[in-house]
Image (cartoon, rainbow, N blue to C red):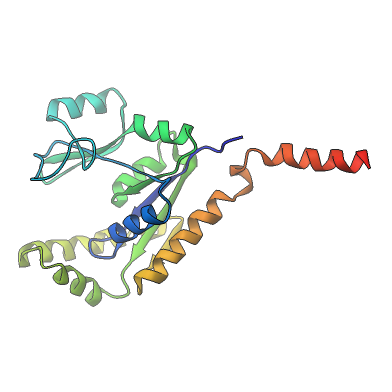
Length: 211
């Protein structure tokens, strides 16, 4: 019998490494489905609808929320972002795990949803705040104002670490990746996630009786 797919939530302050870990995990296990968010913001050059985001108008997005078609959603800097429910449920029923790269608010909503029993949540911490700032500056993508905003937001995000099932300190990306693989492998092997075990053990007992 096929097990139900898991919902694997990765969260961290910006710069702690969750997006890199998500990408590496997908490379390690191509059967993972990556959750594509819906958003009301305008597509950036090169972005593809349905691959990078599901681009929707504000009216369309709010209608989806009203109809219960979003697992989670939030408004960020004037635009809505959220996780459409249907693709996630389809992956679960097919036995495929879905990976979420989302913040603590989105993770909280998914954990509190009807699908919460199938959630594994992992929070990624930086080894220090100084290293977090160094990584943000090392990207070379953001202005001083944006970096300052991200650093200010990081303290609030880190305060939610204890709400997660697992916490990784990303001192070394290779080590953190291996730890993340170990978590997913162990969670997949939990007794209550192997629906064929009862029948298998029944077969073993029958072998005893047939000896």
